[in-house]
Every structure is written in structure tokens, then in C-alpha cells.
Picture: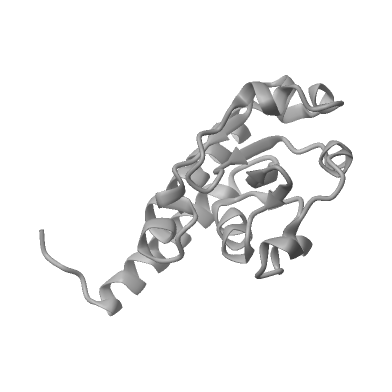
Length: 155
């Protein structure tokens, strides 16, 4: 396999974003998305995750928290905040720890969340989504876009 230089990667990324943008323009609405990076305490995704969600066609419900570079600045101190925001899609990548859906589903009040009711909960491989760089920019963003696109076709 031939190595790509930086300019080729940039052009490929721009092409992917442009293609996704055209796809997103066809959707009736964009999904509200909750990205959970850790479960105890609840930690939402960091800024580049929020940016990927946006580029891929979603609306990060905690975009304001994601700007905190330290995990302590991205704590969701009360899980009722997630219930209040009522995401359409929940993305989970517990930073190398195996996701346990039973643990999430047993959280008080979470059965009322649209993403839970409609089974739009997706575990993502940490090595693809939580590391800034080519994996998240190419593979991760495509996975996000595909999830969001599939959701948009059902609403």
C-alpha cells in the first residue's frame, strides 16, 4: 500500500467532508447526539469528537462541555441532563473499557430517552474514534455519518 503525503490526506478529507455535506443536505433533520466517553462518572466527548459529530451530520448535545480539555471539565454531574436533552442517538466509547449496555439501561429515567426507546445506542471502537488523527478523521467520521444517515432515513 502506498503511503499518502499530507496534501493527499487533506484533499481526501476535504472531499469526504464535501460528500457528507451533500448527503446531510438531503436529510429532513439532524440527530441530537450524546457521546459518552466514560460511564462512572459520566464524561462526554472531547472537542474533536464534538467537531466530528457536527461534520458527520449530528448535533452534539453537550458541545459546550466538550471544549474542556481535561476530563474533569467534561463531567456530566447529573445524568438527568442527558434525559433533559433527550438525544436521538447515543454513542459510547469507554476509552478501552468494554461497554455494558445493561449498566446504561439501568440508569434511573433513561428508559424515557428517545435513543434508548428506539435502540439507537452504538458502541464505537476507541482506537478509531478517541485518537485524534487519520483514524478518527477518516474511519471514525465515516462511521458517525453512516449511523446518522441511517437514523435520518428512519425519521
